[in-house]
Image 1 (cartoon, one colour):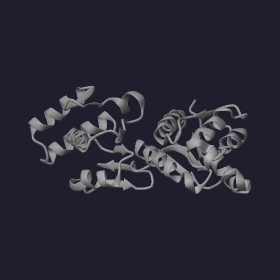
Image 2 (spheres, one colour):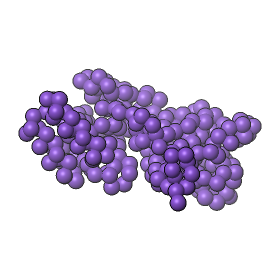
Image 3 (tube, one colour):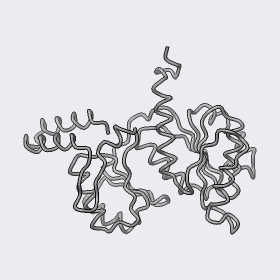
Image 4 (cartoon, helix red, strand yellow):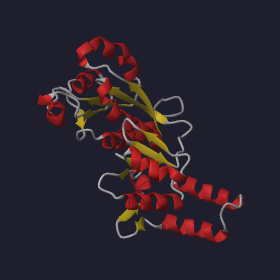
Length: 266
């Protein structure tokens, strides 16, 4: 949520009697801060979204339940919305969501959203392409993160090169989007095919999907890095959040140069 929207919501809550003048003033003061200290273990980046165009996402592994609870409570207290926790276990979510009835958990990707508020209309258009159904865990992480950041996402699943006709059938729809994220494991040939056929940015996300020689995604990563089709951008193995951040920024920048009908502004 942008700072202007947060201020409007605070003023509305003040008008509705949900906040006192003192509480409203405290929240406004907190918005002026760049960082929010939580105990002696976290310094939350309150300006991340405004500064970079993509919100801070809490990476759960390595954090204790006390730390996760403290971080979530601090963000809720400071009126944050669309708070994403990545790689959160179902047990951790159940405990954190005990008093958060709106919270959502995406079990396939282990991604949780607290205080959700999905934008009514996402900006632009991101194509999310997966080589196989086994890549959907990473794809879901990307889709949820992009959606709550404010981008419109179209998913094209299971169109890998083992049956190239599946890709050709949806290629015209992919070509009409503004940026393509390609999630693939095994030998990860799909990003090269897409980059050779499309005139939009292609972001490759190597996954750990595959048999022994794939070595936990190393084979897919090296294949994407060594693509013979120029222009394939590559993130780390299973790094859906990194791909979402890059794609959302590209999508937002392209969309800002279009009018309501999708034409270039003059």
